Image (cartoon, rainbow, N blue to C red; front, top):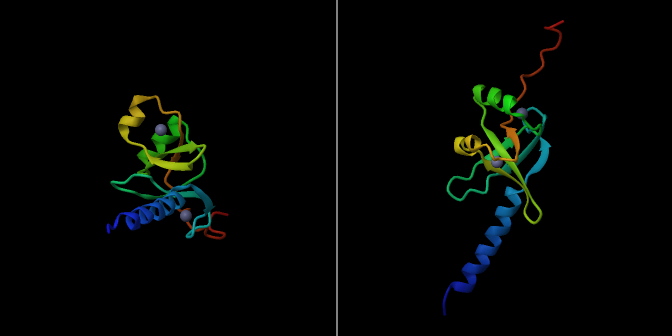
Length: 118
Ligand SMILES: [Zn+2]
Ligand SMILES: [Zn+2]
């Protein structure tokens, strides 16, 4: 009698749940309705739920986003795993070999104020 088979099953179920929440899903931001992509980073130490703008950033746009206080993320695509959002550390950026699509944290648009700007 060991608890082993039960634990293995739980691991399989947990892995399936992880795979689901880690796969990038596209959908509207629940707060402002903007088009966004959302996923949990597949990092066991500090998984982060990310909601990012779907528009890829070029290096200049990334610098501007970071200066603006937004985090940026690597969008990785895998044949078997689906798309993932991964933490993009400064070393990863500095290494200069990253070929991933770069996304920035979504920031909700200010609510439109009807007529004020006209
Ligand atoms: Zn990368
Ligand atoms: Zn929003």
